[in-house]
Image 1 (cartoon, helix red, strand yellow):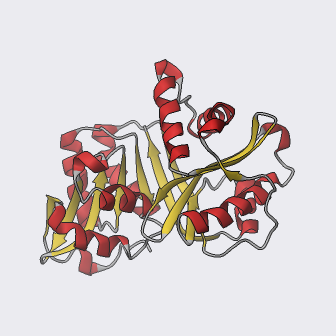
Image 2: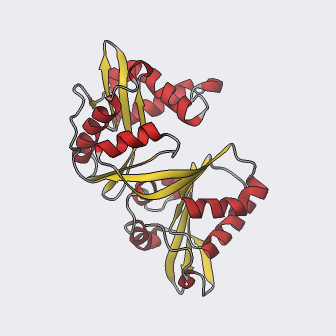
Image 3: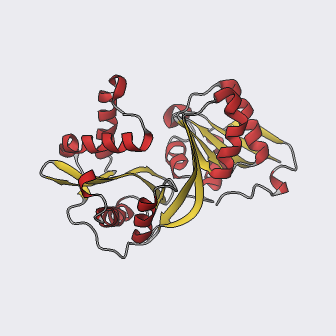
Length: 290
């Protein structure tokens, strides 16, 4: 869970910021395991790479107090916060300001993200969008609702039928096309890699994807669901509920017993569908998009 930002213990003694190395992995895992649903992305990228920045996509910084790792931040494609205290965020913010922005987003618990952004806005601002009310939801049991027939783990032969849906979902969610500016081949390769890793689920009828969802990260006992999409012609029919039920059942077998996701508060239709499937809110995230 998100640490208590009012607790004096996190900031009563001076801390030390340093980049983490392989010898620090056990300490980092201890932090990540306190909240595996929130930190699945960090766990997958950093733990799998053994804290090697080349393997994970960027460095991980730690905040040590009295020789104990209390907080961390992964500075990769996105800046991801782990159990950060106010003093740690101040130190992380100063170093990030000096380094300059290299990431596309800042993601984590709302209080932490908003506070860090306040430290960074003068040097990194303006952002493209601040999404400061994103329920973090978890499902740790098979859904009680019926699964959509035909939903399956996709394979590479489905790539051409799947790609238009992936592009539409990304564009709707982020506001930018993932294939604009000549990025089409790179995006196609990334989607193909996700399919190859068994992380893409969907139903395809007559060569057209009508429902899709993806596993974005598999951490330590928890997998993060993303990219839920229903073809526009069938939205409002309940397809998202039965489709999600099918994916959650499969993903709990294929990847991890706990499935998490985070969504925007204003998307009430999606939140209702997630609750019907069995997801419960366990916290609130925020995202700063650049």
